[in-house]
Length: 399
Image (cartoon, rainbow, N blue to C red; front, top):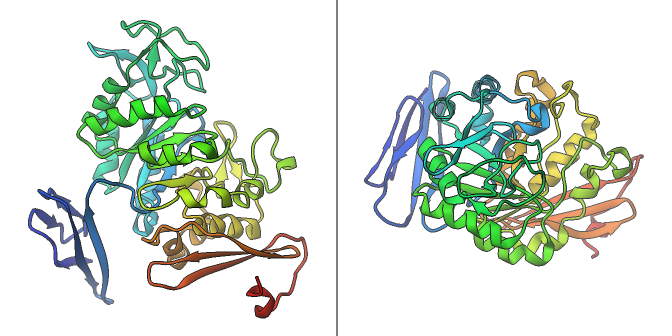
């Protein structure tokens, strides 16, 4: 397959064998380009906008994160294998671009600025990031303003300026190393940060300022359990923020131990809707399809196929970040098909960025509507009963 492009602004170049556009533009702008592709089977083209401005993540991020599969048992090899699978399965061609290293990579800070380095499982973080980038993907990382992460690895603060780590759980150190961390991540080439603790605005702003000062565009995703009253403030400092506690592969809360279920999270997002839009997204947590394990035995999701259809459809209607958490090397045809339906993904990635809200309810049926950039409307009808239900279009639009 070979590629060509029409309308590419000066300063950018196209790799005709991969279709990747790279380079640097001197100023802001919105550039309409048309990408052409051809092989022995024919020709295709697609129009895009290259937008250079003050905001990033103009559509919800899509990718993969290690936690829901490997927990803190991740290592350098597992991350690179996942990245290779995202590329080789073609998921990257459908928009899944981020490969995120969740909790478990962190070693103690070294050097004059005490920035965290990779532990013994990640002997060369620069090599990991380069391996991800060489596949045309983007690299993500995890940290916390606590002195110790949820999984008991070093966090982004310490009791003293010497950076000595005392392994305190759920506590803030007296000294934050946010600026040093951001500089280190920029040097490695990190593109996405999951910043994890019960979110508070002051510490979120400290990290936001540090990332902006790093000289690199790095998405800031705040986790977890955001407060609706703070949503406007989240939008000023971050690109994404978790609206809930951790999701689990259960349909109802009674099936989910202490975690939150897909149904209870997904159908409770309406009040967050006014705060979503290009550059700032409500995050109802990762997708729980495929094979999951959280660091223990990896097994198929407990969601039935119908509930997986609901999960993906609802998250796309909600303009949610689409972050996979499954074992990429155990993708089955059903899961791959579920994740590569471009018409559904286009609803999530619509450039208008409106989050769908429940437009009406008729017994067990919930109707969600989402305005799209081309003036049309996406409609999703969910039957939350355990048996088939009929509804007429007249009843559908009665509300």
